[in-house]
Length: 72
Image 1 (cartoon, helix red, strand yellow):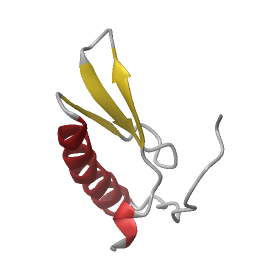
Image 2: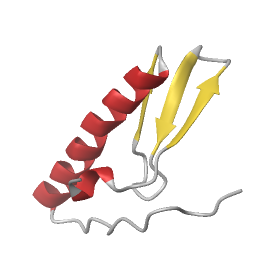
Image 3: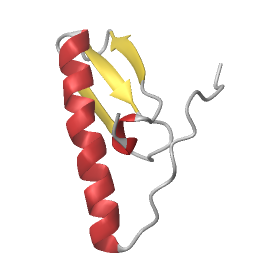
């Protein structure tokens, strides 16, 4: 598995938007959505990659994936 996909992803249904939301807590602002669970996962994989590429282009640090986080 490549490092960009080792980040924890939280997925939940949004009644307001009528889509699944996939958030990556370790990468601020990194989130995606999809009409299905699978679409949300696919979309967030693209967004994670773009988040990391943009951070590198701007010279900003990219946090190392920590794995499972305890937010609950």
